[in-house]
Each structure stands twice: as structure tokens, then as C-alpha cells.
Image 1 (cartoon, rainbow, N blue to C red):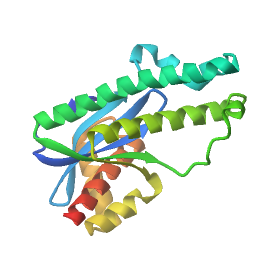
Image 2: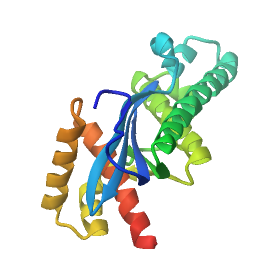
Image 3: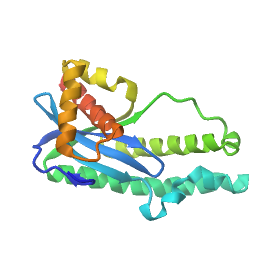
Length: 213
């Protein structure tokens, strides 16, 4: 299954979407689960910003070059454009999965605990904080736009994924890892650690939904 392709042979039913967010784009992996076994039904490098303007996605880096009074309006304009692109990307995914018979019931943005950002004036003077602010902004955009089209959308700590799936699905961590590896082999390259985390996050969400039904 190539990047951006849908697996039309995986079956039908509920699915969940796992996302790992970067500056201007995100790894996106949709998973369906049958008999406690995951299958990757969608895998893509999802656009959160116009691909032809990838460098311009560094909102805070560009804003740091502006007079302070112009920073707020510039960031707001960039955020609005990113929300437009992100919404289009999510609508494409949900629409195509719906066409294949899948119903997206959850989305999970994979992250880790982070310190709160300082005031904007301090962010603009620190290169690491510029990157941190951009990451936080794109994660917020993805999460809020996902919540508009998927009822259950939230963040999840990458550190809890393997054990969380094991508990929710009543499987051992070893079995979870083996089934994830098989799903990745079928899905094909690329299958990085981030793709695996996205798949686990989606699987965890589906297992939790099964437990509530």
C-alpha cells in the first residue's frame, strides 16, 4: 500500500485515525480491527499546509522577523490558512474511508508531555521555542479540525500506547507487537516508528470504543 493509498481489501466497519504531527504535515494512519487484529486501511503524509510552500509553514520563524505589532495578525493569517488545508485533508480521508464502508469513530494525535510555552515575546527570541511553538500550533490545529468531523478526537501520550492497547484488548504486549508488525508488513513501506505509534493510537481508540459498547 503506497503513501496516500486506501486499502480496499481490508473490510468494513469502524476505523480510527492516528496522527503524528510535524511542521506543515503529519503522518496519518487509519486502522480497522477485526478479531483483535489490526489492519492498516490508510497511510499518508497528510498536508497541513500547501506542499508547494512547505518552508513557509515555519510560522513563528517568519513572525520573528516582523515588528512585534505585526506578529499577531501574521500568525492568525497563517493559522487560518493551515486550518483550511488541514480541514480539506481530513475531509478527503473521512470521505474516502466512508466510500469504502469505514466509519471513523475516533482520532488520536500522538504526543508526549511538554512544558507550557512562555509568553510570545520570549518565544520570538529563542530558536528552540520557535520550533516548539510551531509544533504546538499545528497539533492544536489538527486536533481541533479533527474534532469537527470525528466525534472522539484527543491527544494521547506515545509512552502509554503499547501497554494501553494490551490492557484494552486483553492481549499481552508481545502479541500486540506481533500483530502490529504483521499489519505493518502488509501495509508496506514506509513503516517507521511514528507510523507504528499512529497505528497503535488508532488501535487503542478502537479497543476503548469496543469496551464501551
